Amino acid sequence: MRNGRLRIVILGLSLSSSWGNGHATTYRALLKALGAQGHDILFLERDVPWYANNRDLRHAEYCRLELYDSLAALQRWHADIATADAVILGSYVPDGIAIGRLVQRIARGTMVFYDIDTPVTLAALARGDCAYLAADLIPGYDLYLSFTGGPTLAHLERNLGARLARPLYCSVDAAEYRPLGVPQRWDLSYLGTYGADRQDTLERLLLEPARRAPELRFVVAGAQYPRGIDWPPNVERMDHIPPGRHPEFYCASRYTLNITRAEMRRAGHSPSVRLFEAAACETPIISDDWPGLATLFTPGEEIVLADAPDQVLAILRDQPEAARRRLAAAGRRRTLAAHTASHRAAELLAHLREAAPAPQRQPAPAAT
Image (cartoon, rainbow, N blue to C red; front, side, top):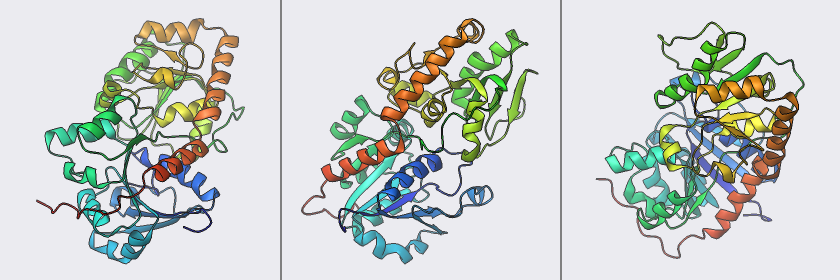
């Protein structure tokens, strides 16, 4: 560490491609904020075909982005991992268990696991089939960062042996996501990759309202939606939209819809990045409800909640324009006050300071 500036190595799912995953936008915003403070960041990403074929970032001015094609190829960066002030391994990284053992064997700085999929991870650990994290590795990390806050943090510490579990939610780059003043094309939009556990909610809160209100305009944007979905004629379908076009998409929407994955809804305290991105663009949000949402946005003032088609249609048809604008402005104020990438970077640095490495590390558990 020089002059308070950290050398950080991150092994994450993807920085170079936002196709089909929310990890890239999370890392991009966070690393841009850290880079602006002068921290030296190396991001190591497994080079896989599906991201290589859909790469929307090839060079980042705020960090060094390096691709590797195998676990053995990481040998090139062993010295960086060993000498970094902090090493952060993210969820869903291919060969994540083997990489975790490598990090815990050679790293001398603060070792961190950053779980962007915490409820999914915990369910997989309970089944014994988590491909990127082994339960016996959890106590070996100095810090477990979680996309899920609330009671899950206590569970990680008390039941799974995490030394220190802290929330690090997604965030928004406030310089990129802002009101644009573009013409509004849709009454209600949804931006999200297909998820089987979200499809029933999409059906209830967007497709059924569209069938009942043919005079309104809807759009669903995202990759991997299967054939056979009954899209009403007033629902426009768009495939993957790269992050650079997200602000225009949100600003062209009178309202946008937030839908939460089933595991994250059950766990609560698991905000999606679309909440902060849309709110920063001053687009009012209709959301499903889950524990902890009210700690992020005040329902009825900064966000509106719905669980049925009639509720969605009442908002779209009956809410006065002045009320819509007040809701949008309040959501943007809350986001800029608490949920920007600069806020998350400050939180990360505070967590790293709190998570001083153990004086004597135990050897990483041997693979079984």
